[in-house]
Image (cartoon, rainbow, N blue to C red; front, side):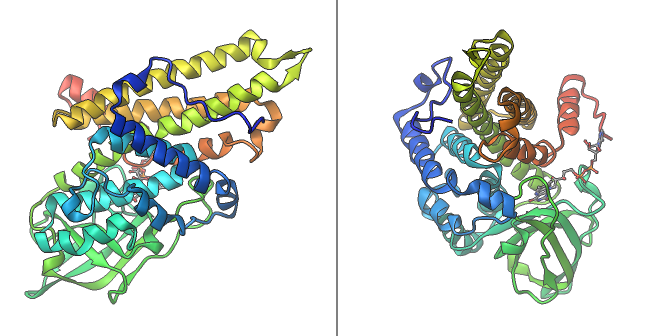
Length: 393
Ligand SMILES: Cc1cc2nc3c(=O)[nH]c(=O)nc-3n(C[C@H](O)[C@H](O)[C@H](O)COP(=O)(O)OP(=O)(O)OC[C@H]3O[C@@H](n4cnc5c(N)ncnc54)[C@H](O)[C@@H]3O)c2cc1C
């Protein structure tokens, strides 16, 4: 591949006209950082199944953690489109890097900001924003994934503290996290959220190995065996499943933008290769069947960009609904995974190597299509919206 040609992000519908100068500055800062700090080494980390932990501080300096959180708490006070563009650029690098920033922002900083006490906000948010500490989010359990309302993890009121027992599974950042935002049912069967610090007696976080997807990201368990949680660590301002679901909406918004970056990366690599690879005395880009793949990819990227942008505007105006966010997450992950597969085929045998990003993106997107609500569950959310009947229960 001719690496002297600079990255040419697809913008068929002149989306740049819709972005402010601030959006473009934020995007180009993250894009440059990804080119410098992620692209050159990510295939290696992916192959070794290691998360490049040295990038966490750099992500903090870049402003990738909690971009929409007020400056008072260490955030950058940017709008949702800026958040989306940051996620897009990070996922062009790798879904594992975007997952790190998504979890830290939407699943850890957002609940502390939205549901936490002033003391909790001041204690944790500025350090999370700088990447001085890492957070994780424990909702999914070994026997309760799509149905988190049936969770078995519990807190028992012991008077001056709570006693936490249970287990969470498939948790991004688990073993590298300094704090965990954990969701558990109380004595009244009400879901409560709390901050559990690493090092608490009875709290372990073993890593899960053997993943063929999100290999440059840590996934693991959270195990709680009579862990004493101070009462001041429980979120005072939220009760019920609504709390974790609001966090998931924020994270799904980031995913809807992020996966466009993965799709853009695959499209860009395939377009360059197709213009250079000669078969039957012509570049393969001259053949109609290869043009069809590229043209369909550009069409789907353009539609996904428009969906994400409009969703960003609705979020900025405080008008977005969980069902709208769900639709964008589902659609954009699906187009990204299909584009990764099609663009890999444009490269023939070369497409299966780690000289190109498609296989890595394709494998990563198998997790992205499952986490934060599976592809199937998201279509049922749209079905519920249309008919008023929840077919998922
Ligand atoms: C790499 C990775 C990172 C993750 N990170 C986190 C994290 O940080 N924190 C966290 O809490 N969780 C995390 N998850 C968990 C993720 O959110 C769950 O995997 C997801 O919610 C699905 O749950 P499950 O895997 O138990 O599948 P299940 O719920 O068992 O679903 C299995 C299949 O059944 C289908 N299904 C389930 N219910 C219905 C229904 N009602 N109607 C039709 N079909 C249905 C699903 O669509 C799916 O195809 C992560 C997962 C992965 C893979």
